[in-house]
Image (cartoon, rainbow, N blue to C red; front, side, top):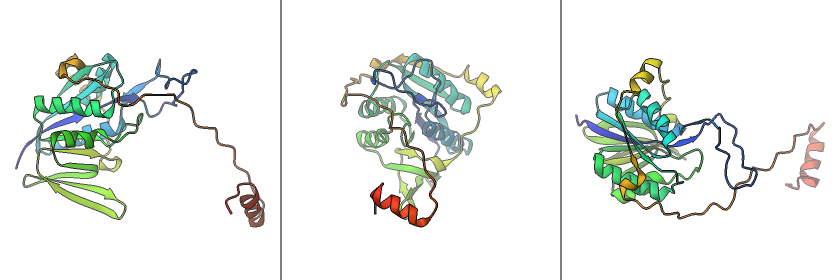
Length: 252
């Protein structure tokens, strides 16, 4: 059986339990004094990497992130979940998907992984682009929205959800896979593993060390909160409902 080396990319985002607030000037989302966490889809990717290593089909799991100094906290969380070591490329800039993909391409050159796992998207920018771009840059096979991953006689088999049901793809390694919600349920990081994570290797370097220019392909013009939804009303009969749909909502 072939034993793989895994690389998982993680992203620091607003904790999914936090209510998002827009800055008063509409320039961005408020991040000051707000709880941050690992992107949920990235956490699923880490969990799958740990499970593959526990099953004996992976020898090492490396996690990487690009972000501010504080993003080391999310790497330590991934290490507590079971990753072996981490790479942190420090930058205060907001990176576009193409810049992240190019940076991951350089990390792939350094680490030479057999499989790169990523969340299908981040819950902040919601772009769903990095995995596809990385596969194109590396000229590697790609499977998106994975709900099951296994290695069969040296071939990676990925099951993904499509409109008509399930589709299973077979591909050689190295490859890129983006993961979906139904792939697994991440474990909780136990206190002993959190303490062990503090002693695991975490290499930090400036983002510029990768030689990737963080060019901005897009420009943020403004951020606004969605309009508040009006409260629903109770109707006394079907005739009243049809009347409102026809004359007030005008959908009939």
